[in-house]
Length: 335
Image 1 (cartoon, rainbow, N blue to C red):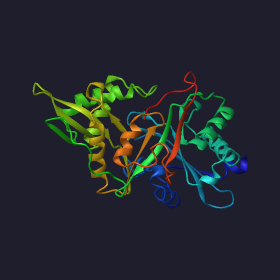
Image 2: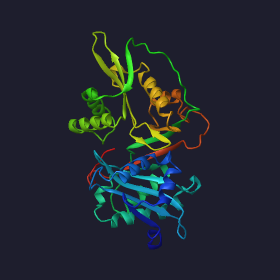
Image 3: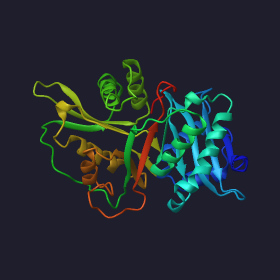
Image 4: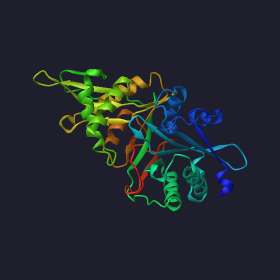
């Protein structure tokens, strides 16, 4: 193990080296959970001053080839899960080859000044990597993992070539699909809190939901499907948030329609509109969708790949897993 620990390098927002940036940018879709945040906090030191922003990089022993990148970071609403992006080819993502690197990550984390074992509330990565890290952390940190995953998802992408640019027409008489404005904050706050309530245990208080809505609007990261009701009042029927963007890849991170406005294709129309806009400036739009989520059909109709039952295997479409650790032993963050 000491030899493998020496294969782990540690960086903060001030000193991420070029080979790590190259590895992230060369795998920008898979690295969407790490790259945009790393670019933001590294280029704008005034963002979240004094916050926890740490990256661990595992390289092949004996050379400098980057194999895995782990982030232990936080955002405006709290600490993020550990994210692990494999740079290694999928053929190397097998238990016997993952055990050593994941145990090395665990040992380095436990020796990191300011990082307590309670900090690691969950880990999110490609399925075999998540399972290998969870097993290693359970053994080394002595905190049990929760058997039922917090999130069991398919990672998919839409490109200009796969985007289905038109769909069924709306039955709504008066609608507007647009970026949110400050006047939408109250309604978006409510929808953010409702969405979080579907993502247990990462729920939001009213104050946190208001702050999330403010940040989404301020940063131009949330789109709305505005509808006019029979009495002339307007309401927001669907929101789509896009909070992680790098040069080539944008990630849709939240899609939500309250029940009263559901089952009319509104989410599909807004997701399609957002994808059309994003693909003017990005090569791919990516997202994660739960393996049992009916929204897979919606995203398939828009042009996201590999989501249809029986569809052929698509390069880059893969299963991601978030595993949590005993909530009596850890301090939950939010993402």
